[in-house]
Length: 277
Ligand SMILES: *[C@@H]1O[C@H](CO)[C@@H](O)[C@H](O)[C@H]1NC(C)=O
Ligand SMILES: *[C@@H]1O[C@H](CO)[C@@H](O)[C@H](O)[C@H]1NC(C)=O
Image (cartoon, protein in one colour):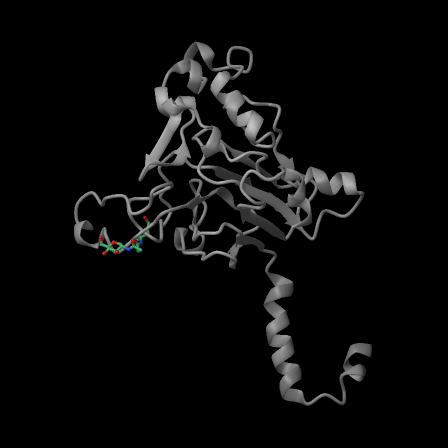
């Protein structure tokens, strides 16, 4: 009632409009991913849901350098985000009836702009998300190089989880200390026009049980990483560098906005600047 008397001088139409606009916001407790491109080139972000979860934003879109886009998700969404690079969708328009040729140099999903739930081709840096509606459980997210690397990406919550600065830091997965493509061993490199555009994981490159942590190597005790996963670990200490990598624990932070930033700092620049971005 106090509210009504405060607003009694307000013209009824804007007030009605205000209520109409605020209504759904108060009722629907969804989550927003704010996807930001700080790379000096376009990125085509993509998202693929796990089984039983909806496709977000058609599954993919163009994000020019310096721009950002908000993607809405249900509060219990599960799936992955990645970025695609070097895309040209006009060149594949002719063979859309058969097996479409790749339209992107990295992260391609069947040659389409809107992946519509299809996962991307490795190697690609993956942001893995597991949202919980129950705030006490916390939603978790990590950045994985298990399928290889194509871009650095940082993930954090906004507003930061209330509490001490230490708690906020726990919710930040920074980008990389080094450009992985620049330190990628030759046998893992994917090149285009003589430039390294992505870096395979040893599992993607060689497919052995030992590198993929399968079979006799399918436990944390028997799969302890390799010289290859240590290249990833050294360049991107906050990322999961092989399937049983426990050094990079998933962040568990509840938030209504998650910020995903491609190229959070300059290539090869220190990762510690990310938190201020
Ligand atoms: C995209 O591909 C088309 C057809 O191959 C080509 O004509 C065009 O120049 C390409 N665009 C860019 C930006 O490379
Ligand atoms: C997207 O995927 C759904 C489910 O597989 C399918 O029904 C729909 O036709 C697809 N849309 C496009 C534009 O490909």
